[in-house]
Image (cartoon, rainbow, N blue to C red; front, side, top):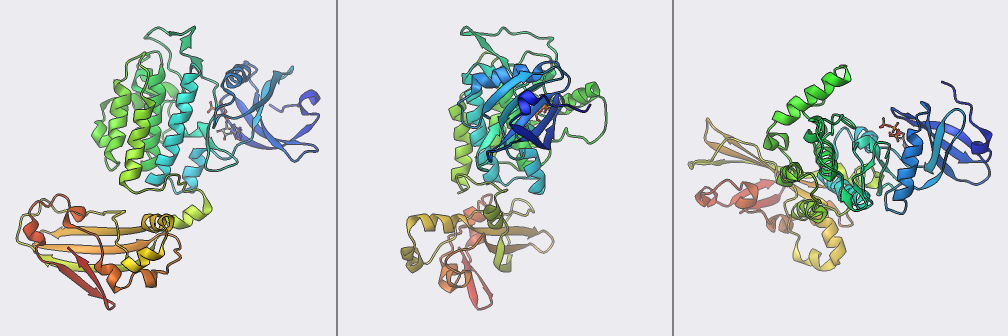
Length: 424
Ligand SMILES: Nc1ncnc2c1ncn2[C@@H]1O[C@H](COP(=O)(O)OP(=O)(O)OP(=O)(O)O)[C@@H](O)[C@H]1O
């Protein structure tokens, strides 16, 4: 359908490009004729008034951080529309740009903001009911994420009364990120938004959810197939490879009662816990250019050594320990102010790959020191012999499962390019 835009909406604006399409309509970039200002125009071509309903909800939500500003809404003979703040790409688009996965630091930075957005919407008495990566967009400031598309949002609290429990309700929203209760026809409440949020966190970190399929099937079959997998998969298997807090979060969301107010601070604290433990940046986004360069590590040196072992090493495995603290020589430490020291530490990673060669009863240790981004101290200065000697790596860090310290009684020295690495 070709839209003839009404002059009364557009007398001061012109439409530049289409910036998105959804199931209810299209979104265009709108440019002011004289001022250098752009907006987004969301148009409901099916004339069902869904954009008007969304605009009214958005009007109620105005003032929250990460909630798009609403400028105007109304309808013409042909369509209803709203003019809102023009935002940047969706997280789904950014995920594709970042090769299908976000780093742990980025996932946490996103989730810390998203939980605040959801809490805000809930505080205003609304449920979003359709959370997915397409609905989260970055703003002009690419470090701020916005929650959008309130087309399916509804009140869960009217005159301070929580809506009543119901089952046999029609499913609402999208199947991939839907809560189990929504799949089963249970009326949505705050807990369902949070369960969707937990699936988003997993999706961002792993790049895929086990129930996602590229098969073209009708909507009903899709909902059913997804439910089958989502309902039967063990949470630990689903969260395999992610920090333990991801499974704790999902269990927490699934155990919330229908009317229960989620503990948003607790959820925040789970993510902050990971951030602290893994020594991650507080606000890190893979899609920001200079942060991208930080993500492409430069290998400074690699060592390999085989160690004869007679003890029982629990199992043959490869362990990649990232973000291990790397010691810095004292005089270099003195040169650095606190901020720089923190930055340098966060930008350096020691990766240790430990493989047990079962047949020969040998333990192969590969140590790789990588530096992320540029440092004021060049890698040559930084990684001299004494720096290697001060590597703060303990067997426990390297391989926590090794109980018998005898296996490590030998100090392992690895010589390569006249540099010495000492692993205690
Ligand atoms: N304010 C905005 N600024 C820039 N692009 C936007 C904005 N709002 C939406 N978009 C783009 O338009 C797309 C569709 O918008 P939206 O999700 O609001 O439409 P919808 O019809 O409700 O979609 P859905 O099928 O997801 O319910 C978004 O995925 C996004 O790419």
